Image (cartoon, rainbow, N blue to C red):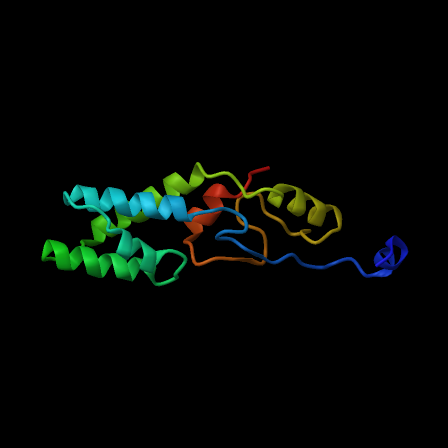
Length: 141
């Protein structure tokens, strides 16, 4: 497409991004938080369990079932809350994937994000991560 043809196209009105693996790699934070939770029970997160969990929206259930079976009793709500908080804390330290900030700034210039709030992910950010994770790693303005 020529530059002239590209300029003739209407400006995009929205920007949709998948969060996990596109905006930020949250798998490291997820894995480490599960490793730390397992360690609290003096256990190690098995590679076979992580392999089944990675990239899955139901991965936490795999780890919960494994840890419950190995400990002989279920995880408490407090343990699950601790792990979620720890994942958010670790994800906050993860950098944005290359090019994300420039893409968002370009979208702002084109008017795609006219209702952008610096305190939250942009409209159209799709993720299975909790808001605490996605808002923690999204760049503040």
